[in-house]
Image 1 (cartoon, rainbow, N blue to C red):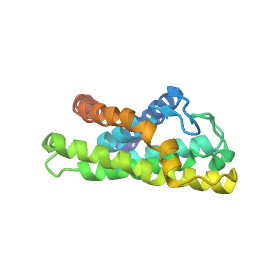
Image 2: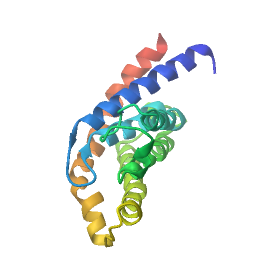
Image 3: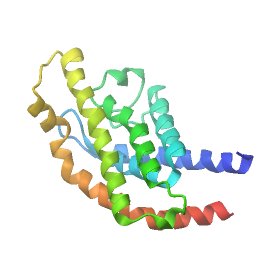
Length: 189
């Protein structure tokens, strides 16, 4: 990798961290897990930056929050590992990587079908739930000493978010094209 592409990746990672942080601050509190726009930027990071750079952006976001920068919906710092929402954060690099891998096309970005984009965004969102909801349950049990059944856990960590996440899936799918065109123009410079 030459210094120009390394610099471009650093700038794109920084921008993605900033957008994900902004998404964290646009939140609606609903129980232990707030509704936020973070996952929109997680999905877009994989789709637009690719699996490795997208995942690196999400790892950077998590590490910067853990060292104390107030990037997460509830602030930041190493104590955030004990937060009920930390599992959702842990899912971000995995989600971004899966979206990026599913949308990687040898023919280039223009050869990805709408159904493939929707599938990638849906699977990326599913990964957020797959990692985040069990962490929420473990946190409630081990840290807060509250035993919660599976149905109650799904009501806290998934069901209220489904309509918004469906909207984010469609929005991310639609945004890929216009944002990609802009990124292509930036890469040509």
